[in-house]
Length: 220
Ligand code: SAM
Ligand code: CA
Image (cartoon, rainbow, N blue to C red):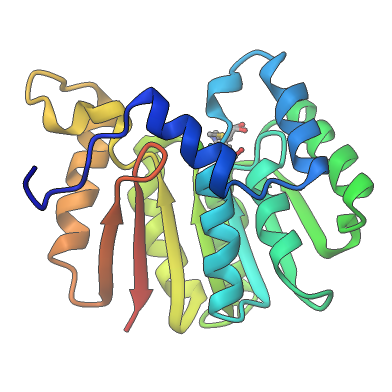
């Protein structure tokens, strides 16, 4: 074995979930319901969600953003990790799937801490900026349409305070970023953003191969 990141076999992945997973009951129920819905593959993996909650807690986040909410699983992971005075603004265009999110947030007793804004995320972010939101957020999770990721990243950088954390999901895109033959719009957008972030002196940066790949950027 070399000292590269290890390949996670099915057996090792099962071990990881069974022996290190701490998924709360309400999140398990939400995950199980989401798995019966169309586009269930958009759901974050339990270990990635657990990690996100830990990061949000570690940095003492209070004002949080989520771009791409779906059935609310990642939002739940972050808000269950944070104290009662934390707030999250969720952006999504889909009122139907996010009605599932609201139901589970109610069940978890955190619905009053989440402000769900239905509409194109870019519009919501630009409204926050126009309303004086620059530099006022601690944490941003980007997980919506991949071709707009760069725009979400740039808006998030503005909205975050110095030391704030941006998490970007699916940055390895099932490995397709490393396949030069794949020139689909989403793959090219992710590949371009990954390189841009590597060279971006406005942030400290690390890409972790957890879930489908998560980038961490801390605003300098
Ligand atoms: N964060 C969720 C989780 O971990 O379970 C998954 C989010 S899912 C991958 C992406 C979501 O982005 C979908 O619910 C979709 O409706 C939303 N979306 C797509 N395009 C959008 C846009 N332009 N503005 C806001 N939301 C968008
Ligand atoms: Ca995702």
